[in-house]
Amino acid sequence: MKLHSENFPLRPAWTEIDLGKLRRNLQLIRRDLPGAVKLLAVVKDEAYGHGALDVARIALDEGAWGCGLSTLEEAMTLRDEGITAPLLLLGERQEAELSWCVAHDLTVCVNEPQIVRTLAKIATAFGKQVPVHVKIHSGMSRYGVRWDEALPLLDLITAEKALRLEGVMTHFAQSDETDKTFANLQFARFNEVLAGLAARGVSVPLRHTCNSGGFLDLPQAHLDMVRVGILLFGIFPSSVCRRIPGLEPVMSVKARIAAIQPLKPGEVVGYGMRYTAPSERRIAVLPIGYGDGFPRVRNQGSVLIHGRRAPLIGGIAMDALMVDITDLPEAQMWDEAVIMGRQGGEEITVHEIAKLKNSVSYDVLTGWRLRLRRKHVNRDIANRAVLDESAHVATAPA
Image (cartoon, rainbow, N blue to C red; front, side, top):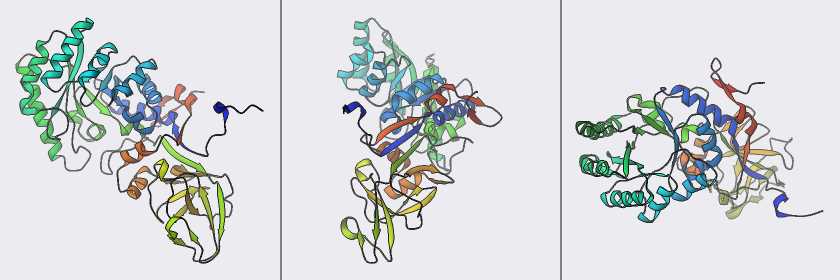
């Protein structure tokens, strides 16, 4: 028997990414979007933990204009894997990155004069005219040039022959809540900039403001393109934003029961002895913990085993969590448990985990760590899926 590292037994804890559901979600989103509006698939941070390369390939296959990323490393990983579609780097770039961006046809946001001049020189040296996008700070106070100071920068860009003003964008601070007052103010400020450009006779091909929340709730702000991230993965950005029927979560987190311990009355569980058995109990140990991104809680939450909830007991350890399976006598060693996702008729949502973590769904999705193996399933269905218009779901042809 040859024991090589490429075929050792895999750890019995993993994130599961359903590529068939991802494709269906993209089809439903594309159908919901007006035909003239382009889709930018935001795949930064490994596509919110789902695997950037697979997500990018499926999104582009479903008609996305391009992909949005945060770092040069993220973009280069996709380029090295053969992705040739537009890649828009959000945020700011160091001057040292600009040559790489020009050489590999990465689209950057330019938000201050020195970067504009440097980028133009590099583009000239490469013999290219490179597209750029300008981020308008319309009230979020993060990246970008202030809306009331933007026109001189835009004039500088349009004067540079080696640059092409392809896009002007902003980002909503609060687009997915019921009160749209501030979002509407931001949009009005953004439109002031567009009016200034129009007065100069400057036409911008891609005007984009909407994240997932804006796409759902601010149709007047769709303009030429929307930037959709978390919604691709079947997660709505808030409890009050508009729903698209049929979207499903793409990610699940699973583990197998690695130990079963009988407890006698008065016996304790875990670090700090945070749980004391009130009677004879039966507990299961799952080989996943805060070292994998699960919240470090005590006696809170539950997992699904055999389609039923089993409560967490004691404190979460780095590599283990314990659950009470006294009422699940059928549970045995190596049975599958769902930490996040659906099993049978029950579901533990990302929002439920976010409450345990005292955080948000974005943090939960991106917080599962790399030692928790990512397993992609339904790849064949993802490759063959077509949208069934009558059922509002995607099905694979026979």
